[in-house]
Amino acid sequence: MPGSRTGRPPVQRTVRRPATVSRPLRDNPVRRLHTRVQKAWDRPLTAYYLIFGGSLLITVLGLVMVYSASQITALQMSLPGSFFFRKQFLAASIGAALLLVASRMPVKLHRGLAYPILAGAVFMMALVQVPGIGMSVNGNQNWISLGGSFQIQPSEFGKLALVLWGADLLARKQDKKLLAQWKHMLVPLVPVAFMLLGLIMLGGDMGTAIILTAILFGLLWLAGAPTRLFVGVLSIAATLGVILIKTSPNRMARLQCIGATDPGPGDACWQAVHGIYALASGGIFGSGLGASVEKWGQLPEAHTDFIFAVTGEELGLAGTLSVLALFAALGYAGIRVAGRTEDPFVRYAAGGVTTWITAQAVINIGAVLGLLPIAGVPLPLFSYGGSALLPTMFAIGLLIAFARDEPGARAALAMRHPRFGRKRGAGGSAFDRSPRRWNTMRRRASAARPSGER
Image 1 (cartoon, rainbow, N blue to C red):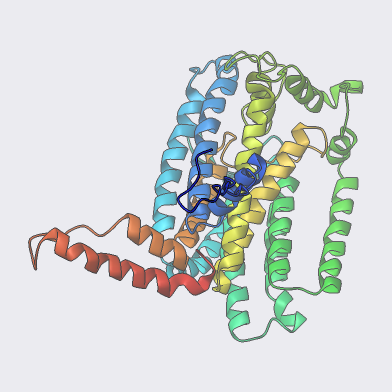
Image 2: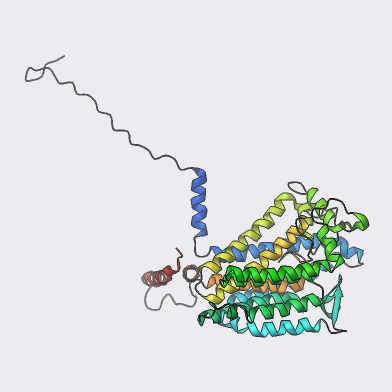
């Protein structure tokens, strides 16, 4: 080695390697997906989009399935194949208009409509029992003829009336701090609900009565009814239900068809069994749209109460799970709206509508699956029937209005949809005016932040 200038041997320097930086472990894909989904759930407009999008998809898919399931029934009645579809499409168009109107109405106007809707529903439900006006369909005296092939079932509007009137009543009593007394919690909510139930049961429609009872329990639960009071009202309702079932051979026969795999003597369980056959023959992806076999006269009420069975046969497990997911999303969004508001009327109304739609969907699907007795209630927004579709779509409009009225949602909608009509040239260029608009939106968002939205 060559010596250094000082005569000393060169110092051998060890080459220092850079310290290995500990790389962060890669995130688990499942955890990353869970984080993204959680952030999406926490956005201010999540409930708004779930309610609007979910109800729209359910209604559109319902129109498709009504057209597919009702063709054979229409032809057997010497009617055009699209007869029931056209009536359902007309009802859906009117319901869409009601939904848009309800979604744009202020909360005060919704509260103002509570008593008129209740009075109108009670009046029409009383008219059903008048000879010459009321009609009997499938053994139930719950219909009024409007001329031609158009009929209306007033008891469907009784659900909407109980939700609006009950929410307004409980909200006013909560403002006066009267709900701590059980008398004010029960009266007059329970007597009016029992009056509606009595008018419905005069026509023999126990399925609608069950939905109305579920709405009543939902309102009492949201109002904070004590457990003993809640159990007391539930016991009275259960006792009346048992009496009504045991005194009716038709209802007892439906109760005995739970889980049946054979039509039995006299084909008493024909409808329940063939609903299971339709679901079992669908497989994973179904036999194809329009290729159902059970709708060719084997399955009664294929386009109304048992349309879920035809959906399972034609669209398979994938189709039925999609319908279930849409209803689950709709129910989640309704619970979220009811849980995040500070307005008592909004909380009671949103909870009542969510209870109504969820309970009716569970009862209908449970009957098709053979887990519950056949109650004769349609699948909300999905089954054929304008009388059920119109008040349900108005109720969906209520949920949309409540979801839009959340402080965080109002700020988000204002940022995404600025008001039109502002002149860019007035008061400076667009570049000079854009920070001013952004600051205004920031003030709106910061003022809405205490509601818990991000």
